[in-house]
Length: 407
Ligand SMILES: C[S@@+](CC[C@H](N)C(=O)[O-])C[C@H]1O[C@@H](n2cnc3c(N)ncnc32)[C@H](O)[C@@H]1O
Image (cartoon, rainbow, N blue to C red; front, side, top):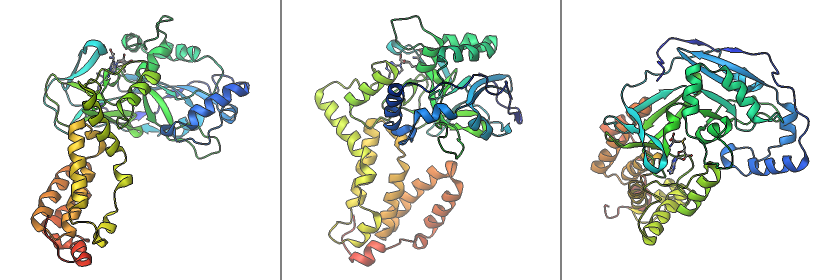
């Protein structure tokens, strides 16, 4: 694991600009196919993408970033490279001895916890070894670009990179392109505000995080941080020593058959996670139902203000819905879905019902959760905790719908 503790790092030296010549315009059918793929991919956020214009306006260069002892090689659009900070800030210190890489059975290798990791606990902080655009707007073969990148890595970096998993393609020996595709994590870099900008999504390969297998009920999540050029991996629920540390490669609220289809199409494997291996058709139905309900939860939920004003809804309508969501999150291992929003909403409902005791219980839970991630918000909630009547919606439901049975 590289040490990440030095002060600031120079941005790194890029090689000559336009290290690859601009491409001729690709054939119409190629453009149409890529346009259809990119436009329909909600995660890329580019519904009007135009590959022809993309290729015409792209100019790339290779960059080396020397961060402490670690070398990052990036192939970047010039506009994107120009938006990177002049110096990268040092990331938070990396916790020691949180994980090991070990055998994960049919999934190959995996990452396993070496000690108890609390919910929200940092598991690892890591720079990528390679960064490439999600879609390279050049007709230069990708293999050529990857070879150039590979040649710039340190000996140790090359060794580690080639030991990562390959995609499951059986029809040719694994190439660097296979390794990148099997191991890349989609990070977002800033793009210039110009017509036909580069896509913000980039593929980044990490020597440790790329060992995390996928789970449809993952116990960890990552966050990308451009100012430090690093990824932060943290636990979304408590993790025990020996437990495998997993992340999600694709959103996990779709039904099982759709999740499996997407993972096969995008990554070439059949998911073996515990949530895909439930024992019976009934269990699959139950799981799919819960995931569908969570997927549409916020879209289908009556607004808090509407509930406060509408006497035809019962006092516990929203509370029951949020408690149900919390139960489904536990059942499906979907703590990645921000359960705190439900806790927050339940506290608000009790405030609107002037239920001091329950308002305090749930607000205390909100405070606990926010202390780490948003201390200034935690302060506001702790003010409401010590004096519930300062909560802005205090008694709204009671005022508008009259006094009703407590829930
Ligand atoms: C990013 S790598 C993860 C680490 C990998 N297992 C290794 O040995 O280095 C992705 C590959 O791991 C395997 N994998 C990850 N999650 C899996 C899962 N839930 N079920 C089956 N295989 C999985 C697949 O072979 C996939 O192509």
